[in-house]
Image (cartoon, rainbow, N blue to C red):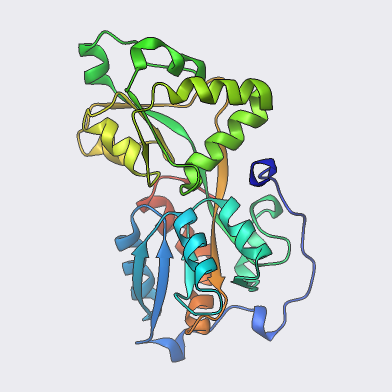
Length: 294
């Protein structure tokens, strides 16, 4: 049933903000701590800048969105963290439907287009994530394998055990790949394609960040990745980033407050900061994705 989701906008929200839906003041929050489930690149620098700006400290646990969803479902009613930062929007939609998120409409959300946020204010997109092929050019050249340009190229026999993808039941990246394939190819053709692709995948990684790293290290030729790979390239890895010509899946990566957050005001301040012009610049500079705010 989850595969029937289409990642589109949820409409506009013209409701006037109440006192609980305005930007949180950080003056009285300095020295406090928020706990964060995070599935985002450049987290340490991002959280460091947030602390500099607000005085609020961040403790985080790096987890894929599917792992976060499973964990908060299992511990329903018990505050495990204050904020959920980044990941696949499908998991945020499911969490909202399960009553696991806290509604909060930041004033900064006015600057975010309607198609990138929940109409009821339970989550707001902070960036747009595009799926790309991270290809190890060196290994590809050594093995005489042409760099793939389309999804269908990955079905070629020379890519046997050379394509790595994350687990769609855990990773928002892989879920979006499946959803995108089925939306563009249609269910029958899409599932046939996925069954064939499965033959070239040695195993499924737990997190979306693993396949591009394995490709950069030369353990596989192609890693299906949630980013462009610019940071890996800047670090000297011999990789190329390819946006598949027969369809590039994308989704808004959200931020949300978890139900029962112990530091609710600190969580609101974090959402405000992520959506602010300053916060959006920090996110963009430390994790090369398209900001949702212009």
